Image (cartoon, rainbow, N blue to C red; front, side, top):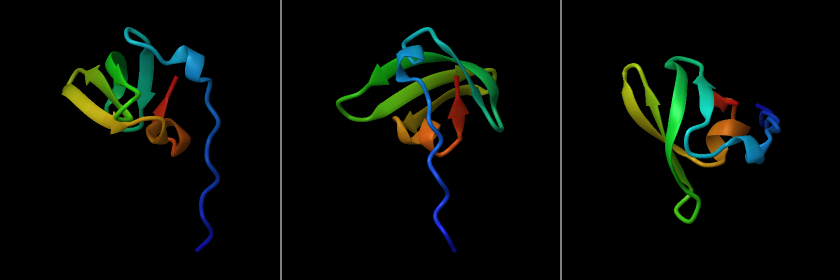
Length: 64
């Protein structure tokens, strides 16, 4: 099975306080970015979730 192409995104639009969207959880707000450990935390109505950064954007799980 061929590998899915990575989705491009504008990293300058990803910062603490930025609004992002998730396929399942809907709209959320970035509450923490740890680029050194490659993690991003987002608060949704269902609670906070942690994602691998920037992979979550490249793989289409999160969008700005």
